[in-house]
Length: 166
Image 1 (cartoon, helix red, strand yellow):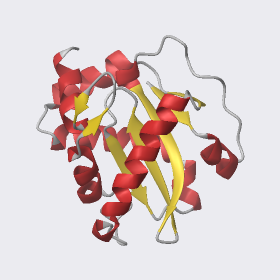
Image 2 (cartoon, rainbow, N blue to C red):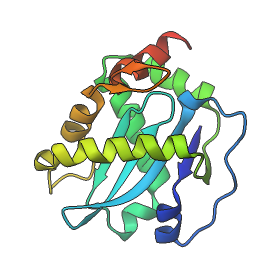
Image 3 (cartoon, rainbow, N blue to C red):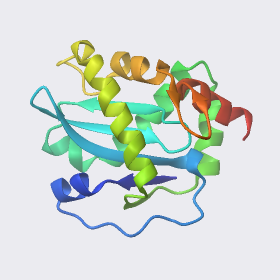
C-alpha cells in the first residue's frame, strides 16, 4: 500500500519522500494532502482509483507523526462502515502489501484532490471539533458524483466496485 504525500504536506512535515512506485495498483494508493479548513490543519487522504476520501480535522503535532497509522486505521474503519467484512479488510491490506510513503504522483491526482477540497467546503459545517476523524463530512464527499473522461459516479460506488475486482 502506498501513501503519496503532496508537496505541501512534505514541507509541513519537513521531509522528503522517494518517488512513487511506478507499478503500484491505484486501488491500494492514497494521496495525502495538507489543507487548512476553518483555521485548523486538516489531512485529506484520497484513494487514487476511486477518489474515496478520508478526512482528519484539527491535526496537532503528535497526530502528524502518526499519520500513516491514522490513515491505515481509518481505511479499516471505512471498509467496515461501508458494510464489508473483516475478511475484506484483511484481504485489502494483504493485497496492498507493506506500507510505503512516497512523493506526489501526478497532475491527475492533484486535480482529484482539488475536486475533494471544493466539495469539502460545501460540507464544512459538518466538521466536528471534538473528533479527529470526520466520517460525516467524508460520507458526504464520498457520495458526490464526479465526471471524468474515464468514469462518472461517486467515490463510494467506485471504492466498493474495487472490492468486487479483488
